[in-house]
Length: 260
Ligand code: NAD
Image (cartoon, rainbow, N blue to C red; front, side, top):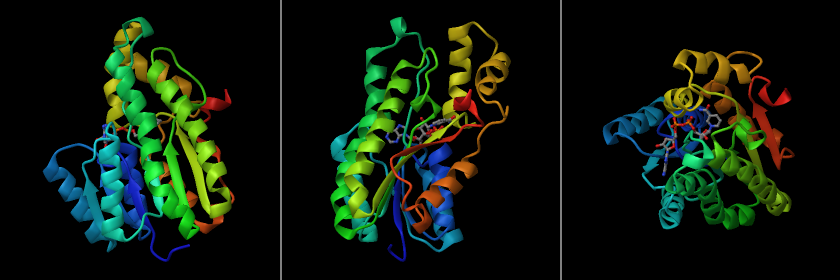
């Protein structure tokens, strides 16, 4: 296992990805941030993470719908750090709509960002990880990688897909010290969830308050949102030497949702 680990976290300018990037930097890893947003705000995050943790933090604005941009992002990380030891495929978007109204271009975008980008990024890092005998690939799936909800057809399809892809990476990496795991969070109160509250209210004909109480937290027996810190800490554990035999698994962090 390398002394200093170098990680790429896709979609890390916000929400869960940012929480994982913070947790990684907090234990001394170099991190490549990725995602969209205000350039000034992203630069401020980059500088803060570097300063607070005495690590190297770089940023790639690669669009996860574009395979060539994903390959360039990995090449830029290799240039900045020398090698990539950890890849977290986290970037994701959501759209809540009945199937009959679901826009085709949104289906394609969700499959591209939430599923295919993980393939392109994994393909770009995999040979190097196998050759060096160490690698950790963490795919941020969802409880929706294991069970469905209505009106989230593309998201549920992509998330079930990434759980399957995780198993294949695990089998191909198993004899080379490369593990692959999916994390399946329940509801985390990030911008992605905030945005779907009004859409779900519209699709189900409910008030926004009722959506939080009777749709989102109704799914979670603990009746509490999962936090980005809880996911970040678990991701750190999956990168550790003690997690070497944990591979090909889908780990629920969902307040008991999928147990029901
Ligand atoms: P978020 O909206 O806060 O963050 C999404 C990130 O992805 C942002 O950094 C955004 O800029 C980036 N992104 C979006 N499109 C991109 C593109 N084309 N190229 C590059 N980056 C892009 O969302 P979040 O809730 O933190 O979600 C992160 C991941 O966690 C997603 O895969 C999501 O499906 C998954 N997830 C979220 C929840 C939840 O409740 N929030 C639950 C389960 C799984």
